[in-house]
Length: 302
Image 1 (cartoon, one colour):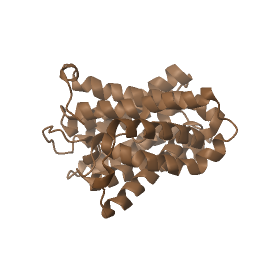
Image 2: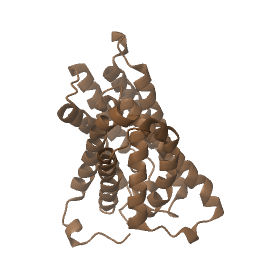
Image 3: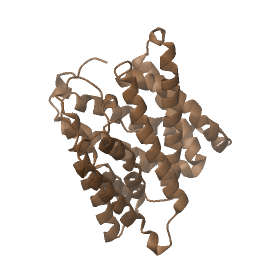
């Protein structure tokens, strides 16, 4: 993928990062209506299949450069991405978007803390855990534990995604890596997606799936690549801690999901803890490397 053009360089990098987060959360919010028709598995399958086609057309990965020892990691990464996507969509089917994102964010935050040398990072994890408890409010007895469980699986999947992508290093970066893993993710999601979507596929449903694939992951990943070329990983990761808050806002605006003051405070606690955890990372000067190679700041799975 070539470097950003003059127009892209004139845009402040933080606006690209925020634009990526807005696209991710808008795509998630708009997916709720499709989930009602074809289920979380069907929605994930449609989105990933369309995303795979787009990335294959754009990136045209050099398949001849693949090595035998690359296959297990690429396949594992694709399978994890597929089931992580299904898990997250199953979560937002049952619990508010902001709550789902807050729980899911624990995955990359834990990876960031694991790579940090500061003992205070453990305080960040504890604070984020308290924030999630405030968001879910288990003492009320009305928690949808299935939804929370799916969000927890999504968090685990996101963490595994970052670790596996880091292992790939610079072998497959940017859109090339996605063009190789997203087709595998689509096949993994098809296991549950095709049965759920069977009998419900119409032109409108397929067109919606394609549109959602553009919102997530095509646009946000491209924005993230451009942003990371002009931001340090620490600055980028700190900014990405705003993701749960953006999820709350779009959940309110698009889905009319309201949270109590205690839940809002819990979300803010997760955001602050996430930003503090990222500050524990060592700054590196931007040098054209992708977020995929950075612990704790990996691209948002789909």
